[in-house]
Length: 202
Ligand SMILES: C[S@@+](CC[C@H](N)C(=O)[O-])C[C@H]1O[C@@H](n2cnc3c(N)ncnc32)[C@H](O)[C@@H]1O
Image 1 (tube, rainbow, N blue to C red):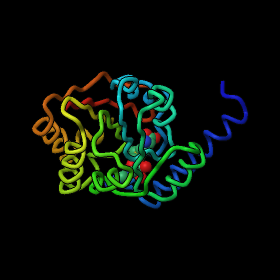
Image 2 (cartoon, rainbow, N blue to C red; image 1 turned 120 degrees about the vertical axis):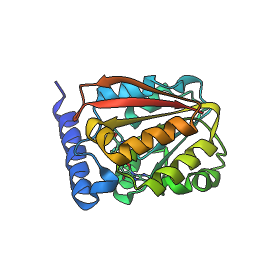
Image 3 (spheres, protein in one colour; image 1 turned 90 degrees about the vertical axis):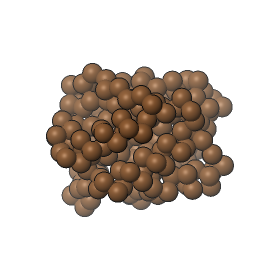
């Protein structure tokens, strides 16, 4: 059971995500923040503790960030990139001292280089790739690939509905073509809706 204050905070995050979903359904593409179970599985899927530079894409209300930050080495660089300024503002409130840039994944390298970050060992993505138009999937994935070090990994998640959409199938084919290795990890059922995790190695 959550303590009253934690329950209030969780409700606030849910309401904010829901409100932004109504405003920007295709960018937000989720009715609830990821569960802590999904967040822990995502964080455990990539070698965060040895990574020197980590980027989080589409942090939203910070559901994944909460599981990522405690695993990072103290010296590791960390940057979050979020399209929606309302989410970025909420994220800054929750993680003072950490950096989030308002921007689009298609400008990822440029955004990171402004922070003197020229490569990444791990990218944790909350982006709704299947709901992106094909041109955005392709441009975004190229940015991810050119930022990742050889052997570096991106972990991302998706829902069953996205997997069945033609654009979701296109994303899977694209990832399989452009990454050296793509693994679909077991479903996380304790999430609304249940989600699969994809680990892609450059
Ligand atoms: C499905 S929500 C995930 C939020 C959070 N990571 C979670 O797991 O609860 C997708 C997030 O990606 C952001 N986003 C969508 N398109 C983006 C883009 N092109 N570049 C950067 N962020 C984007 C949205 O604003 C939103 O915060």
